[in-house]
Amino acid sequence: MTDSSLSQSEPAPRPGHVGSGGSARPANMALTAETESRLYRSLRVASGAAAHLVALGFPAAVAVLARPGSSLFSWHPLLMALAFSFLMTEALLIFSPETSLLRSFSRKVRVRVHWALQLLALLCALLGLAIITYNKHLNGKGHFVTWHGLTGLLAVLYAGGQCAGGVLLLYPKLMKNWTLAKLKLYHATSGLVGYLLGCASLMLGMCSLWFTTTVTGVSWYLAMLCPLVTSLVIMNQVSNAYLYRKRSQH
Image (cartoon, rainbow, N blue to C red; front, side, top):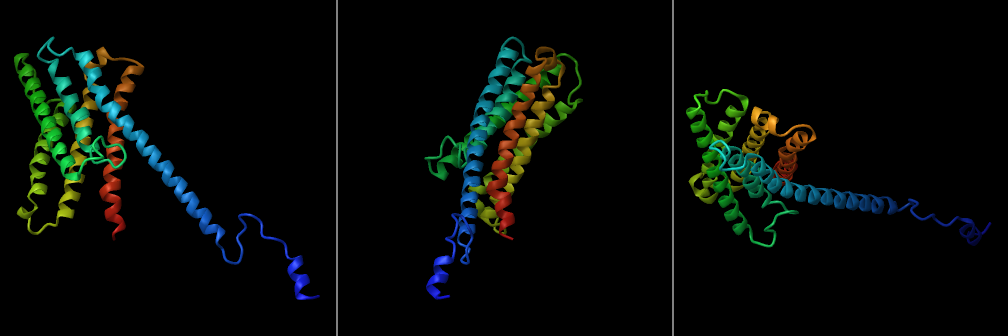
């Protein structure tokens, strides 16, 4: 049998079949990786948009329930919701590569806005803490005797320390033995801990007598989901930006 007859009898390669060169498999793997990357990015965009809506919607709902101005206590839940649900969440979402409202601005501008929002969050939290402390004093009730009260106090104190520690990022030369990359890593991870403390305080507050008598049934479960959703989004953002990247460098 001649060489020409052999070449004519060989079947043509099927589409997608891996030949001796093995070029189809890497192409398919690359296509799959690209599809997964697009899907993952779409999920992050959707979850980030949900976090923006929850960050604003939760304090708005609390304002309707508390009716600020109706009593001294009514300001406490609103101020705490503004601090830990709206201001602090937006301060962190500013650095989201997918859903930041200031994506078109420089990092320097985003850092300044982050600082402003964090300081406003701390101010609201301090006012909320002062109001509930004074209200309990007027009513002769004990201070910080519940898990909600203790967690809230810890969250406010932690937020104050976090803001003070953030000064080191503005003046990194003050820490000569620390690189700027390490300072950013520690600030981000410690900030995540503080944010989770704030969200935990909100969730414990929704177990209080005031909230459970006002909000019941499915509405209560939906309210509990709000800080949980924002916590998961922020955790994913910080992990992707710092923790996973740091692990991949080793």
